[in-house]
Length: 249
Image (cartoon, rainbow, N blue to C red):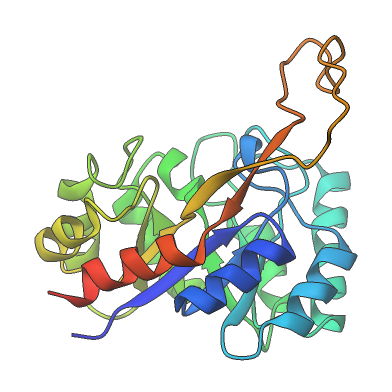
């Protein structure tokens, strides 16, 4: 059984590690603590240069928070899509809802028109929608290739019942990709119980800073504590282990 593995990469460095570990594709994001925001043009360009065997998808999300976007934010998203096209990325990841918690079909139509020639994934805004079953049918009609979802739960493992239902409803018309806390320990269970063949995970580990002088009295996060002297980076070895755990089925 063939699986596809997408790594949520927070940098060009993590993107390269994902490729080394055997990822099918990368979803390149900034702002991981916010759930992912649009990466810089420099990050996209560098990742594009480094990824030779792994496909590069980028998230188009102007901010954290909800998925109801103002006209100004919509302009930003369309401009970011043009930048991504210029940099020759393979695919885009986005999502938007209206006030009622349904798919924002008019804006999604604009996004799909702007994305022609690139693969499109609807991200975990799907887990915040009012009716997953109805939304799935709308996304198929719009021409979206895949949906990233945790099955409406905090983790994909907890969301197995809805993931299985959505995969059966999709019936090959759109790909359902399981994401959120997918790891070495649970990927085989999620795969076997849902029938899903695409998985999204980060496979990150903490890397200690090389700084010798450290002023721990100051935090760049202001009121929110941010750890300045370590960072999370995708591990090629962890990617390999997760891929192997699923491939053993």
